[in-house]
Amino acid sequence: MFEIVEKRVLSPVVNLFKVKAPLIAKKRKPGQFVIFDVDERGERVPLTIADADPEEGTVTIICQAIGKSTIKLNSLNKGDKILSFVGPLGVPSHIEKFGTTICIGGGVGIAVAYPLAKALKNEGNYVISIMGFRSKELLFMEEDLRATSDELHITTDDGTYARKGLVTDVLQEILADGRVIDFVLAVGPVPMMKAVCNITKKYKIKTMVSLNPIMVDGTGMCGACRVTIGGQTKFVCVDGPEFNGHMVDFDELMKRQSIYKEQERISIEKLQHEECCQTR
Image 1 (tube, rainbow, N blue to C red):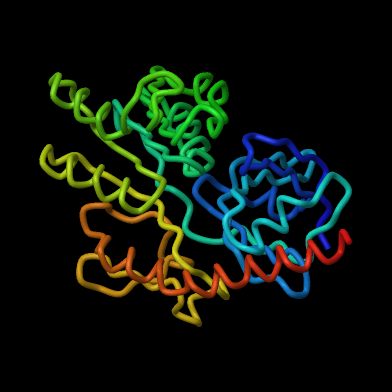
Image 2 (cartoon, helix red, strand yellow):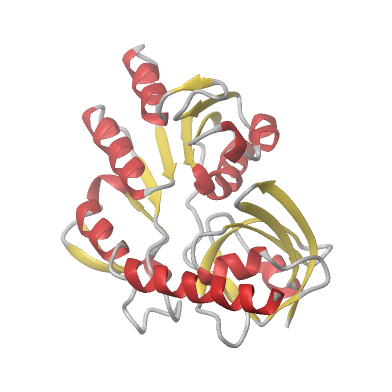
């Protein structure tokens, strides 16, 4: 069992948790993730390690309530315990001094973009961060990214905060201005990452994306997280989660991500019914 030592509400559907996991905190590197089981009836869910403190022995994760297990995790509080917490998993990010870099995060993808922007900055890169949210109420980690970025741009789909528009609007303007960009990282919804890669491919800019497909065992055995990269099958849990964005078959990935939408809907309805019965 792994104890939650801190919980912070970041938005109506997103929470930050610090979990006591000394061994993971000691070995974790930027880009890696954990897989958790919230309880005996939970599904195995991967979450990126947003931060870690080896001295405290804590690992920071950021969870958006989407499915049954993430809803149940977000209902927990400080002092509660998670059944299992496995990691660090995945291949660490390749960090070097590229020059001028752009880190793009959409929604909860900010949780992945932040530690990578921080690592790129520590390596001596000039870091431009672009954050995108649907609305102001869903925004989080602004000050964290501002502190580790040389430039920070924020967009909201509805214009309720900062600039109205998409992260790709800002990216396109930066590139159209003729600025030399040496490296781009994009993390967020699959359509957003695909759109970013379509733009950077025209400019021949090295672009990495962090993928988060359906995942089960996290060891490469089950094949649930398979993706097609450059015409070859890869397993995100052991070969990723980061890949060359210009080689990802995003259309196939989007189809695979939607396979269990109906089952997810039924599972959430059952959870809501159970909660309703318990409060009566």
